[in-house]
Image (cartoon, rainbow, N blue to C red; front, side, top):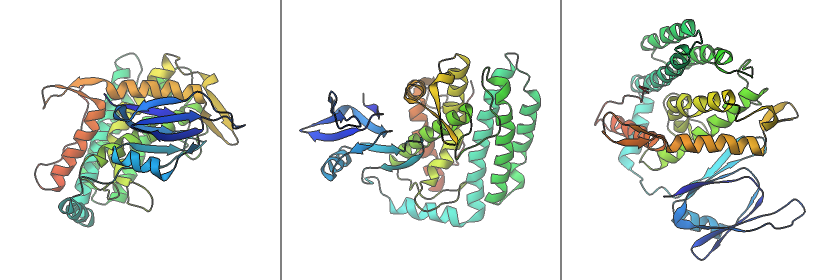
Length: 334
């Protein structure tokens, strides 16, 4: 089974025959012990330290369908190397553009993303509400806001509702999380530990959604809820809305309430709070565990991992855009 590899230390990545070789390098140029990775076992890389590689290496990665996602020192996602689009479809591209330029069709898809996202947020809140946390008022407020989505046909209006839903949802974090304060949602940069976890987790989820989109015929730059922009894969932002409550927020509640991540796993840099290397490794371990966790799919009647659920969501969106089957967002039932 192919694995995702996380590179935290600076170093050199190179090809050695049919094997990848990573050599960590200290600040003074001292080389550490090399790691050898058989290429057939590698799914993708997440790079959190500086990486020295040449075009020959990236050609090799591209031929073997291996993606590389890059993050800067402050945990900001900076870009990805993606293999050549081998599932290109002119028909899909034309249909995607037509759905984007038709405001009514675009609004339908945008609403579906928000319906799925708000449903999964409420599912999280109901879980804790049933365990002694009084979240009934917040649940009712979000359900009321979600019920009003059909009243709006413009994406800026829908994004306004999304913002109100998020604010209500994040306000509930203080009741769910035991030892940390959520405060206001701050992104660039995050101002406290919970915000640092949300930002880091959201980037991880975004990268997974981008990878899943790339495995379909969808073009990741044409989106429906978020506005397409230069130098970003905005469709991954759309799809991530559905899975952030399930993949990111549930992990945050777990690692904080079980004290798997504590105050010592963060560090303050200038005007921001970020995870240190130990904190990142702990969060990533839980994230990988969640991605590989399986559920019994109601339609397919078989076990499906969270990682595969993201790809299935992209396939459902593809069918909607091609006029094959109406898109219905994934909603957790557990």
